[in-house]
Length: 632
Image 1 (tube, rainbow, N blue to C red):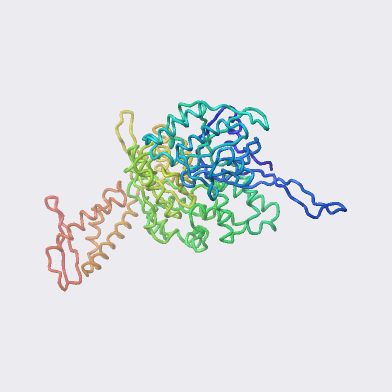
Image 2 (image 1 turned 180 degrees about the horizontal axis):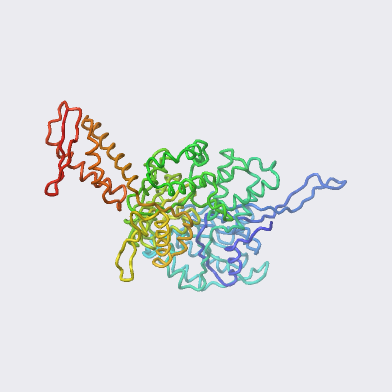
């Protein structure tokens, strides 16, 4: 394939006749694909006299910015580059005798070990002389220019004089035609390499019409594809692979590195070489680079076995939500089989799974998230939880995602991005998502589509190995035309009714209230609606909680709990009278009707030597619940 053109180099060549200074920002530390002309000498010759012959070969390679810049400038008859940075000072590029001698003569350089330390005042004089030089085309590259001023808007006297001189030189310089070679008029330019354009004084770049700003963007698909073709032979087994395998390798390498630099592609190749990864392991190599771990728990055989047998395990912890459990397991199985987003042309960077748990409070949404974490990672505490009610204000996005550059705390990163970088294989729970500020929700568009997010420091967190779970109570209550909240669904409604009304309310919320249908579209059909718990399920939840109370009594007080069936039934009736608050409501009622009076009664007793407590009766007087106990 033909080598795609590098945009910023094309813009530089186009602007050289009309611009004297260039501020180059963006991916200045990236590598760039260039075509090199190499002279090859054949000593064996090709005739009877065995005379050496020579020829020119064309090769494509990845090189740093200075080399790419020199290749481009050389084709425009530039003889050498002068490179300056605040650490090493001034040097000549390329460091070859012809270029070094010419630059030394023209600019009276005093190089020691190839470098010369100069002050800002001397550097401004060098700029002035270079802009008027007519014997040879040349350019000055000021590297690490972001580090010259300590504060761009609070310059010292020396820094201020330097940038004023640079501004004046940019305006007074003229395009020149070398005396020896002739050609069209072009400037001998000064190129400032900065991390961000605002690292230089704003007036320097804004007040001079001769200063051009060039931004080096991340490589596009075509450029990454060309780089993948160049790097492919370095992978183990490439030379023996057939055309179909090679084509698939280039496709996977290109698509899997969306948003990455060409330097990252080189690093992935070196990582694959060190880990002895073959051409067929390119997805593992990319994932290892992204998340820093070669071991992939999603591909472990034991995980498939655990998920295959998971239905009873989950329903033992999340009771009465059979449709929700089935759909959740379907999405989890899809994730393990790497079929998430399989309908799209490229879905490899999306999260492993996305789940939107909706339904009444207290019915098991958070519990199911914990259970999934236990199932996949062996520890229910391994999930990352974010209570979105803490992010109801727009400015709180700085906490979650990191402050923008220039703001206080931007170098700390965000809570979310930092957590995912530390635990790339995890379940990430966003609790009560509807309580977050709408501008924060916009950030989830990038996570759901591209599987990555960049914080204020410029560091990227990859979500491609996570399961994202959103929980919401949307649809349980709705507002009427007067703004009054009314119950949309209630206990006793069929599951089909609850699911329909909740889904409808969620759609209306994202489409009409937030005006963000694209976010709902990214979530897709991954909405899992939970039903109200039934009386039968509430009874099971009650019994489980009662067993927890008995276990705690045994552990803490060495007492065995007992009660007649009639007391248990009365307590069940008190705790399950109102099921609108789900299992959490059952627990709250058990605490009020049993745990509190039990604690009060035991507090008044002498428990030394006692091994068994029997609750024989429950009574209520003046809204105070009391228990009758027998200790033995």
